Each structure stands twice: as structure tokens, then as C-alpha cells.
Length: 330
Ligand SMILES: [Zn+2]
Image (tube, rainbow, N blue to C red):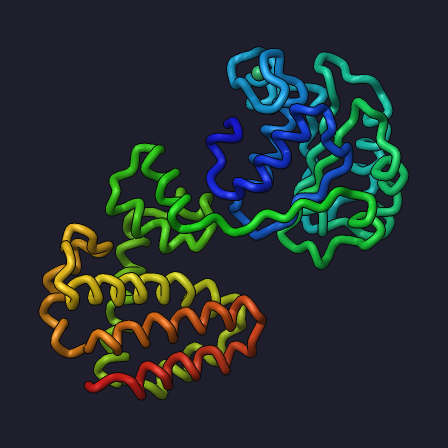
């Protein structure tokens, strides 16, 4: 994988490429951002670029160094992950010792620490000195999905780089480049919600099941069915579960709403995201007005904002459901 193979986060990639090209990459880096946005892949590209025999600001992917790093068989590049829930002090000691030794076969030593938030104080403290004054030939890249759990003493010694969720459009593009059909890529990019790894790991059956669930929920909103049941179901689950379960379903419902808008406005039906639901949507098109379709999109958007701003989960769920019910004519 080279920079071009990592979708999204263009600004971050540009900054990193430029600093590599100028030989000005900071030796201690902290990559933070949600899961599945390419932090580890980017760190691996940096490890290759620093050791590549052909390029200085990217991985060529064909020289022996790039190839060996891809096989995780390059002694100067180490990936350190917590064996269980915690990064151990002996792992940090090993890193520290190696960081002061000149590279064995490559040009630079690179240490990639995954789940850097899983570092206790003791392990963290042992790293402070090397993070503050690393030898010029050693680079330490810390990765985290939870930047708030990173020890402040660590954070202040690293150049912080934050990655954002990958846009649906970028995920779709990347899936198509990987050979996936357009319709499938569109739907998967909705379900993945910014996480490319997730898009790649979803299996067909699971995807169809989620879409069916979304359609049924959409219909019960329109029919004003089971409001109490829905409220009860979703408002008693932990936040993370609600976000993970309801998030993708809401994305799909909003794709149904967008399709309905195309149908209602007499647009080109080739642009429908849910081609296989076309007949169903045309059948129910009269039951829902154009304005209503737009309102539904807004309600869903509000729920996502609520998740983002850590609003109380019961509040998010109840206002979503109530809004849908109040605005349905069923
Ligand atoms: Zn190379």
C-alpha cells in the first residue's frame, strides 16, 4: 500500500508527504482518529517511505525494503501492540533500547505502537525521554482511537495528527477501485459509516439483512406502528450498542429517503441507490410527500449530530422516533 491506496484524509497525507520529501518528518508522532480510517496503513507507508530505495516521500512497493516491510519481515520496523488490554512496560523497554541502536538493514528505525491509549503510567513514563529526544534515525508513531485516554505527558511530546472518518464518497471510490460493482459499493459505503475496514469486512448476507431491517423500520415509522416498542428497545441499550446498531440502519433509511426524493421529483431512476427496492419504493411513493422526505433526512441527520455531540442516547432515540411519528400520515 502506498499513499494513493489509502482513501480519505487527503490533507493529512499531503502534510506527511511534504515533510517526508523535505526530510522534516517529526520523529515522534501521534495519529488519532476513529477506527478504520487508515492510521495504521498510513504509519506503514511512512515506515516504507523512510526506508524505500526508490522514493523518499512514498512507498514504491517494489524495492526489497518496501516488500519486506509489507511482509512484516524487516528488522528496523517494529509494530508493538498490547498483548491483552495493556501495553506492558517490558515492551516499552525493548522499544527504548532498540531506538538508540543504529538501523540494522534499513535507513531508519520505525516503531509503530497500536492502541497507544492502552499504556499505563509506568509504561508511558518509560517512553518520555525517547519521545522527547529521539535519535535522528528513529521514528515512533503512536496510534489511537481514543485520544482522550492518551497520557498528557505523552501527547505533549508528540506531533499530533488527527484523522477523520472517510467520506462515503471516498469509501465508494476505493471499493470500486478494488473491483466492486457500483451499486454494491454505494450501499456498503453507507453501511460502513467512515470505516473502510468495515466496508471490506461486511458480508453480503449481513448487508442484505441490515437493509431489510432498515426497510421494516422505515415502514413502521410510516405506519406509526409500535412506537412504544421501538422506544423501549433502543432507549434501554448502552450508547455504543445503539450507535452501532441504529447508525447503519439510519444511514440506509436516509438512502431510501434520498431515492424517494429522486422518484418524486421524476429524476433519473438509474441514480437510485437501492435499485433492488425500486418497485417497493414506487409503490409507496404516494404515501409520503416530498417535504416529508426532506424532513426525514433532517431527523436522521439530527440523530447523527446527537451521537457526535454525546447527547443522551434516550433523548436522541426518543426525538427521532417521535419526529417520525408526528410527521407520518399513516
Ligand atoms: Zn520502496
